[in-house]
Length: 218
Image 1 (tube, rainbow, N blue to C red):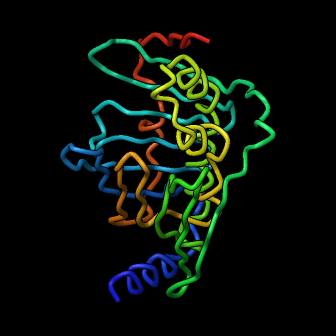
Image 2 (image 1 turned 45 degrees about the horizontal axis):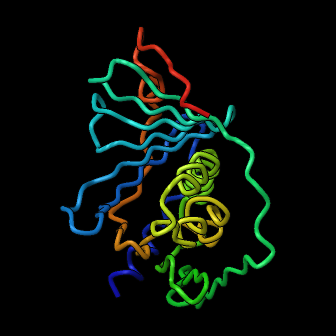
């Protein structure tokens, strides 16, 4: 019942104005670690992810230039990742996506590769659709880098689910809608907490003045 009312609230927020930004809040947790808050701010041109503090470290997606910029104040520089070319999918690459409509506007999903459940959860199709698109765009920019990391890892650490979630199927579950509850094969979880509209604050989508931009190794 709680999920039903949460979705109804999301659907009733109305249309965003040009001077608004979408503000999402999640609780994320990696396997064996303490849960931590994640704030996601979305505009037509940018997406920012941080811990909820305006002055803290953050990750910025430039949606027009297809760049991801990682700002860490202690490092006194911003690392820039650009979208690269991915190799072709193997001929035997056959992921399976199972979905089931549940309460109003939601559906459960399960993404499986080689019999292993890589990701499963609940998504709301009509809730903040542009935010879901921005999340997929962010993962697409990093996909080539994630593939290089996977390729250079020891064979014992090369799990096909990493290729699914981070490389070749980055937008598959996000096309179903905004994630409300998600669990990955690694044990990592994400739980939706809130969504609202806030007045646009352009300063939150800028690299701090004077901070050099450094391109990540290709």
